[in-house]
Image (cartoon, rainbow, N blue to C red; front, side):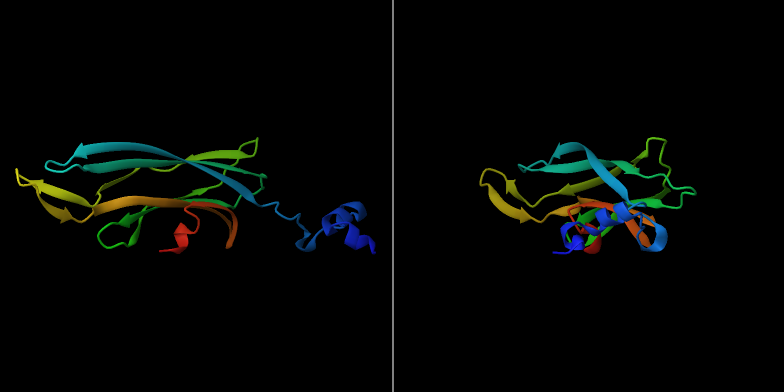
Length: 170
C-alpha cells in the first residue's frame, strides 16, 4: 500500500512543506455565517371570525467569523424574503450589502433592518344567529425566510439560508 493512500494529501503536504495550488491554504478566505432571527408578533382580532390579522417584525442578527485579510475586499449581503399569500409569489422584503470588517478576534456582528409583514390566514366568516359560513382566502405577505452570502469578488466564501435554497426559488 502506498504512503499517499494511508495519509490524506493535506497531511502529506504539511509534512513535506508543499503548498496547495494558487499559493493559498484551502479555505483561508472562507467566512462562517451564523444567523439568529429575532421576531416580534402583533395580533389583531378580526370581528366575526376566530382568526387574527398578524403583523410580524423580523430582524436578522448575523455573526461572521473568519481570517482577517489585508486589504479586506469581501462583502456580506443579507436578503429577507416573503410570500404573497394571494399570488404565491416570492418577493424580496429587504436586502443590504455591507463590507466585511472583522475585528481583531476575527468576528463581526451585523444586524439587518427591521422588516415587517402583515397577513391574514384563510378563515371563515360567521354571520348572525344562523352562522352562515363564508370562506375568506388568505391575504397579505408572510415572512418566508432569509439568505446571507459573503463574497470575495465573484466567489461565494460563506453563506447561510433558511429554508435552505430560499434564494434560488425566486
